[in-house]
Image (tube, rainbow, N blue to C red; front, side):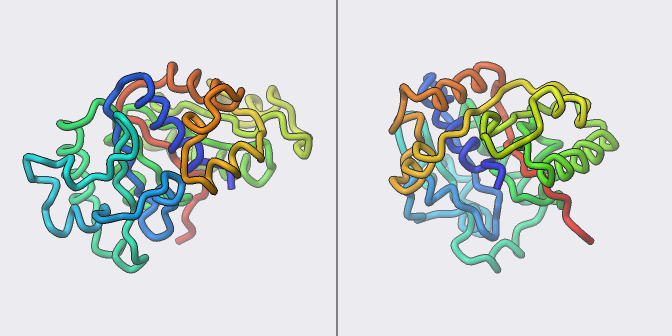
Length: 239
């Protein structure tokens, strides 16, 4: 894929490293990987939180996995079918309650544009859109940008070009800007070994490879976005 979960996880870790109390929420409800990327064995998921009204409790932190100083994770449901019980109103309530307990919320979303995603887009202050120079990814990114433009959400978008220096891509960075008609605010280098090892360890590379260029690129991205952020996918759901 384009690496949105990798970016979301490490962006959240970078906020936490900076000293901000951060909650990473996996809204890829059917097949989310945030728990794997952070080595979390879920005791409570988004589903558990909503179906049991745990987001209304005064000690909300007790039900969210504490991964590292300042970094908390709320994983996706364990079973894909549990996603069917979660609606826009429930998500809106959850985000409102989480925002009272954390400095930063980072949402990892599915690679589709559906009702849940639209609700997240509207509630977020920034939409971090991840793409690569793969032609299929650029085509789908353009489709999503068109949708967000119609919804008057373009001002929230921050476009990230992942794996920008991969030798397999024939499109250059300037061509991406021309094709999508939007500035790229950050580029993330292609580092398969670092990313693969960090995923296998379940430790964001912000922590496991703190001096690598890819970690510095995420920190630079963090410096450009603030507070309720969303890392969005790029595919358009087919009706």
